[in-house]
Length: 304
Image (cartoon, rainbow, N blue to C red; front, side, top):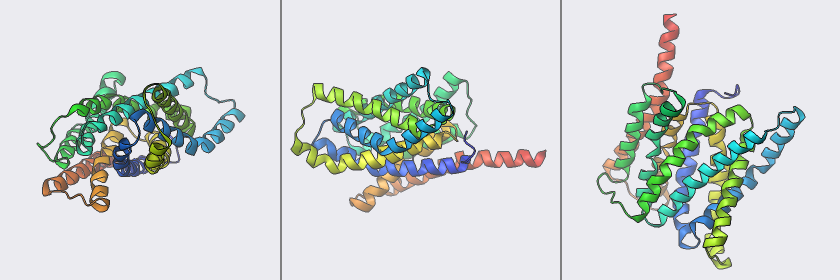
């Protein structure tokens, strides 16, 4: 972990990431009226790569001056993370075409309990006790926020459900790779390039697009590319260098809360009492996973 950022600061940064992603969900949906999912994903991730490129080049020069530039193994790991990012983003984007934003937000949150399970199973890292009830609580809170019992599976829902696995694996590994490489901007730019280029290659082979369609979707593509990818996903890489993957998944699940709040503020959407209760439950779970380990550390320090 880096010395310049504490666990609390990293978790606060991830909360900002969730806010950014929540604000972008509507743009992801409205863009599908004009361009295909591969075209949209490819363009927004290449824009994100362009945003991060100056900092990535700076890190490349810095590492080169110290004979620490990434090797072939590092490049393969970055490509693997880019592949996971591509799978998660494209599956989710295809799913959004055939389902509602509400359903997509709820079903994407299935990655939250997957992260601590995969960390325990693959890496032998047993999460602290607060992670398990917090993971379940976040999932229940998201279900309440989405309407509780009104989520009816549609064609696109299976795609969104499938996207939860690559999202979970990406959250699990991105912090580990970034911490070992000590080059978060280089990693972010690399994975964005892989995701964007693979998506555009697929789009050329399978989708048709016109200048008029690109113009109609330009605002959505630019916003999600610059803000959601360039800023949000890069900040995720930086934040996850300094916190546990299971904690990060729980904090990032607040994306659904912010999506609902942006819908309330900007689009006139209204939340029921049950929806507000779901927001409160997710917030409580985030506080639980943040404060309980701190309290245990203080108790242990006082006992010494």
